[in-house]
Length: 341
Image (cartoon, rainbow, N blue to C red; front, side, top):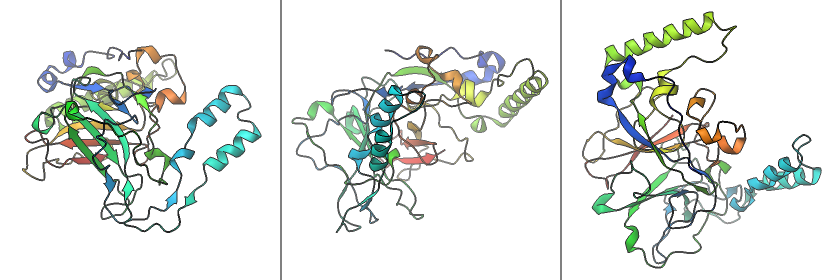
């Protein structure tokens, strides 16, 4: 089933004609649980990975011998239990199974420098994703991995991301059984296998990055709408339309477009190799929409109110935020940068 973004509540360029010069596009990925194969763009699906090429591993020293076993993160157990008993919930037997699956395990004899296989998070083919840029040397496939522990960087609480570009036509024999970590630090690092339903939509920059006078006019317009909403609250309980949540940057997993800076002030994202201003490559989001961004809910799912439609990938970034990954437009092979919002 395709996923279609509803028309925006109003024409923002009619209100602010200057926005036309900043208009861009982004491709909403609309990941939904399924059974992708190596030939498909996916989240959490099998990778088109050469059988003779080493699988990515985390190179940093940190604890890796205690956590949840990936095979125990069986979300269908609880989902099916609630489906059978929507009012009373899971049976006592099912609850005991869930408690057992939630247990942490310790792997004896594991050192902080033992090879730790990274988790394949997503793979994206250019043929499927309109806003995915070409990789270095004409690579057409982007593969994204991460370490399943928050134990990196100066704070020792950062995530570790690895991007790999490749030419899909040059892959011969494919690795059938990739290595996986024995335990993970959090279930949010283990994605649910999802097929994608790419959809290109119009997007505009984060308000704080627009010219100061235009940003001030947008702020004044929003404040006026909020005042009107407060006065009419008894008759119309709906939230007023906002530039950030309704008109500019869609929520959910997406490729290209503009990054949101709703949790921090905008930070310069210049390439560390050549100082070129970087562009948004990929947004990895903990949810497809929330209470403030419901206007982006696809038309095909407007009547759904279930957990699976809001968090289909089961990926959790930080405190249920989003991870914005940036790339260098001058040289895609330069190291990426990222920001959590």
